[in-house]
Image (cartoon, rainbow, N blue to C red; front, side, top):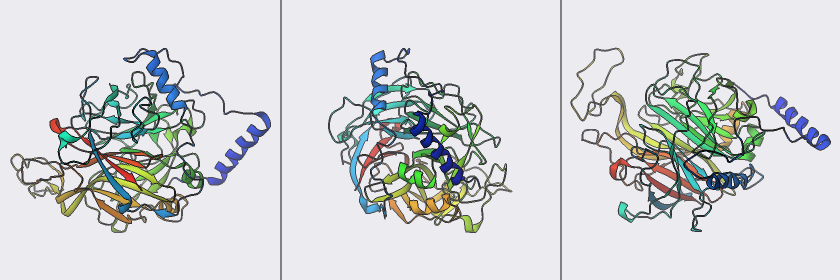
Length: 473
């Protein structure tokens, strides 16, 4: 496993501290493609671009840290208070919210001129799965109602835009994007939208999967992508979320992002994979195609050198694992005295199999059965039933993994929360016309106000997503 040499990191930071005290060093000029000029051609005017930069500069790297010591309690399912849901906006920028919400992030300085309604900031999120463009939207007051027409609707702050900028490999099949906002880190002059792109299938081990871009979607300035060192891309590119600054300082110095993936089947192990990640430590930006080191936090299997698929054993399996599970989003929840690492997705219940939704099993080695007629002709991983869930992990267990005190597969969820009662369209009919296999998807977390946003897949008209909101008390 890749590990962090903590003594060398401490010596590095001590050297910087001495430099600052003696010579007034500032870490140099940001040398990446990011600039603070506002002379940009875009669908927005210059004043809008300036507003984005000014808002971003008001958020310091430490502004999201609530305490200087680590929380000692665990966030429990009963600590999540449901506040309601809201709808997504009309189409913009040549795309829409159909089959949307594969990834999202909260931006604390967004929508600065919006109402003082207790739901500040904005969301950057991916829209239509076929286009995989990003839009920034407002956050309206959520409403508790089973009637979608009662819900408030978000407004578009920045229309859909292609943040890939030819910086990632061409999407050969279905893409799995990830996005997370993080304030400026060492050597940077502005906050970034950190990006990752995974694919349903990869043809090789060394694939460029990660990058970042600017907050101005009309001119994202996305640098050429890089890759994760030592791990198959099946493990690393599907979700991104912030690691609290105080936890990172103690356990993964300089690494403030968590990146990972859970792919249905066993390609990424028998549970969600997670790694601490700090690309700014390798350059601003890292060189195209370079390998960025990570620290493993969760991995339910063994990464053999250069192997595209993970080796799994019975003892490396997460409890209650099902091959039809789909954990598509995550967040690191914190309050003043409690914390949890959560994964949100769709949990397989009962028997699980690879084949078709009517129960037909497709054997790996044959002989192969006839493909069932529509609507049961979609081959994949299925289960007797599916439910939207949140699973909760103890950050102390992840700290033990980061420090070599536990194996990556030893942490287990300490709680699970069924979300079906809140979902507006949780139905799964494996023998009917609806072969919906995903219910809950993207996740965003407002740490300052303790607000958790979860996208429900295909819950609105035109197969648009709905955004649900919880308060972490």
